[in-house]
Structure formats: structure tokens, C-alpha cells
Amino acid sequence: MLEVGLADALPVVAGGRRITVLTGAGISTDSGIPDFRGPQGVWTTNPGAERTSSLAHYLADPEVRKQAWRNRLASPAWEARPNPGHLAIVELGRQGRLRAVVTQNIDELHQRAGVPPELVVELHGSMWGWSCWSCGATGPMAEVLGRLRAGEDDPPCSRCGGVIKSTTISFGQSLDPAVLQAGVEAATDCDVLLAVGSSLQVQPAATLVPLAARAGAAVVVVNAQPTPYDDVADAVVRDRISAALPALVAAT
Image 1 (cartoon, rainbow, N blue to C red):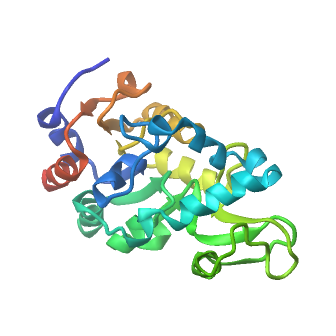
Image 2 (cartoon, helix red, strand yellow):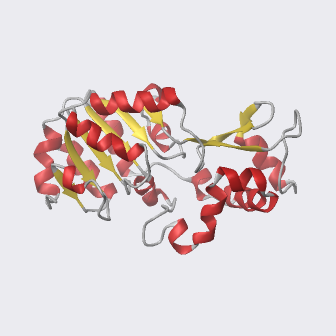
């Protein structure tokens, strides 16, 4: 593994003219949204919570759905605001160097920070909408949150009575092929791939890193913990994301 720091990553990012940023939960922790696998992550501190992210458990077990809805209602993401890490990516766009943001996050903080929606590839969907597994109806999540606050604990589809869930990708659920293809194209059509705040343990998102490297892109990993693809990277940065990203973007 090539162990380097921020100083070594600066010229790599400075040389990028078509930069794709792959983001994971770590970029949003400074906005008050906990990650999943970090030392204080949701699944680290409460392993049972992972069941609510399993599609099979969610569809089969009303108690899992009720817990999932309680978790969703209490999520800090509804009030979260973009932090300097998100804003640094917006600055990449202002510089004309942002190819795309490919994100595993579901919080839409990239869009709210100012990244044009057409440049954001949401691999795992968005928590801001819902869909019905029986009739396919969809709508804004605000509707369901209102029903939860009014006392419902497992709100069914208002059209057909079927099971509804957020428009996010759960474990056991396939990614949208078109969305995944957009992510692959962004990773193989850049000169720098900046992987930020991702454990790079979840497939197929993690495979974008070696795909980019094989296509000739330089790879920079910015993450608090080691990842399985650090040995693929040209630079590895362990600094706090909300400080490291602005510094990297400023190095033009």
C-alpha cells in the first residue's frame, strides 16, 4: 500500500481536468449524519440496525418495517446542511473540472450544496421519496413523514394498500442498471477519481475504483479508515474530509 498524505495528494488533484468524485457516508458525518461502518457508525454501535436495511427482512417482517420507519422519522438527515466537503465539490464544478459526483449517499446533500443534479449519480437512490412495491406508486417522503407523525407506524400505500419503502437501495435489492452504467462511465471517463468518505466495502460501488485505475485515471482515497483499495491509489489521505477536500480543490 502506498501510504502518503495530503501534501502528496495535492499535485495529483491539481493536475486533474476531468475529476469524478465517488462519495460515501463519511463526507456527511460533519453535517451530523452518522456513517455506518466507522467507529461510531450506525451498524457498529447497533448491529441489529442492519436488518432494517435488508430488503427481504423489510418486506417480510412488519416489526422490521416499523423500526425502519422510526429510524427514518428520527434521522438527522432531514435537517442536515452541506458542510465544507460538499461545498469543495461544488467549487470543482465552478472550476470546470467536475466530471461527475457518483455517490453512495441518499441524503441529496450534494444537490443542496449546489452540484447540478445532472452531474450527480445516486447509486443507492434517495431517501427523499417513497415507492410502493405492489402498484409502483411514488411520492415525496414528506407525505409519509406526516403520516408517521400523525400516529401510523407502518403506513401502507394510499393507493393500493401495499408495502411502501423509501426510494433507496437496500441490501438484496438490485441497483438501477442505467444508474450503475452512468457511474461506470463517470469512473472510466475521468483523469482523476477522488474517492471520499467511503469504506469501499460495498459492491458494485467499490469496483469503480479499480475500473478508473485500469482506464488510466489517478486515484486519490480520502477516508478516516483504511480501505480495501488503498493499494490501488496514487495517494491516500487520512485527514478530516471537511478540511482535506477544500485544500485539495484549492490546489489548482
